[in-house]
Length: 499
Image (tube, rainbow, N blue to C red; front, side, top):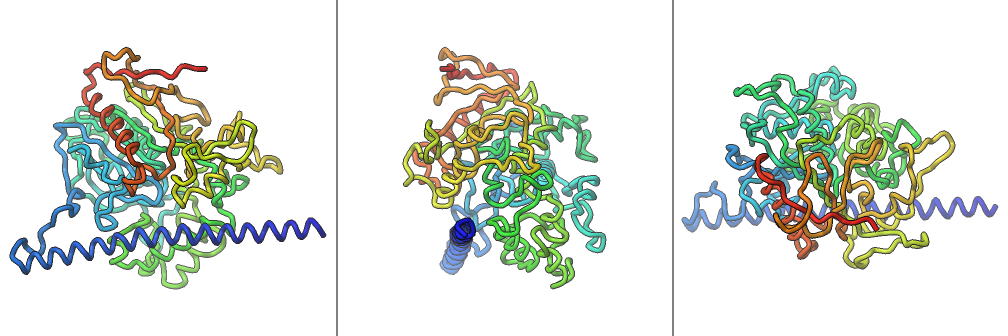
């Protein structure tokens, strides 16, 4: 009897927590979306008023209106490409709202691509290549067939949108680029880097000047709160570690709210909504015009993962954010000896040495409302060992994954660790100027710092990050610009000594 009461109480608490989390997340999404629409309406009114006053043509842009999505760079200065994370967006979406909170304004040669908000690391890497180089996005024949990007009757096998001209068409080993990825964006960059090395883009094996795609197209990779080894939050939010290597969801979980919402959004296919935001599943043929009306919608929503579509095949971002999924990506992605690597790992909650409650180092009031509860849960989460569930990698320990930023584990953000650890060195918070007595940076090594901040400190709202926002982005952009030339002497850093 006591066990039944306890089970019922735990079920009730779980349901209450799920309802609370769903309300908070959905409410925040509507807040961001509503803010973007309101800003767009206001900008349109300003244009209309100015046009009537004779101050500006009605179709002209007003100060602050985003036109950078059409920018094309010539290669005179290596661009810095900022790659957004899960639920993110690039320039031209959400009424000009900046995912990187305006950090792109710190340099004149910055690109902020708009990639699928929920699409897999593989699909986003392919989209990023064609965004830069130009052409029709090719997700790859074998990948599209394996993950059934669209059923045969949908007549949409492997291709996505077309970029008539890339934003960096001269991209090559002679005109390389820097890449900065937030959250899942870091893994997207790393997989793209590997694809360049592998020559994985059909028709782009060589360019007009005879350059072969290679890892030398990338000067540096910077991970900002990057999901380099997955996250235990993916399991806490609903991914099942004991089934199919973390590719499927529980029937009742926060991720189901995400699944149903994104399916309905794509199925409705409202142009007005698509203008502001895109989950990125257009290549799966989920629109009501293609999917077969209500019957197609029923198939997308059937069961815990759908009968077809990205959630049924596991070809979306959350499976890649599990520890299992990150291990699969890392097993094929190298850290290249000619590229410089930097990582800024964030932390807002840590377990006390005695294993007590989670303690936010900088105070709980500074943690974003979306992340506070999850930060505590992640500090207490334990992998469900036993019952035929092997650990996600050899040597796994729960205590390694306790420190976190409310979305990702700090252990995961420093450098690639699973299934095989890549070279990594912890550095002091302040980089030394050249000649300042530090050690020169070496390519092929991840230089990482631990930053006391939550997962959203460096995106969306610049004021939340305060002075730390500028310190971190100034450091990132400074590192990039010091490495613009492969012939220049590398900058130096102070190495953190082991205690």
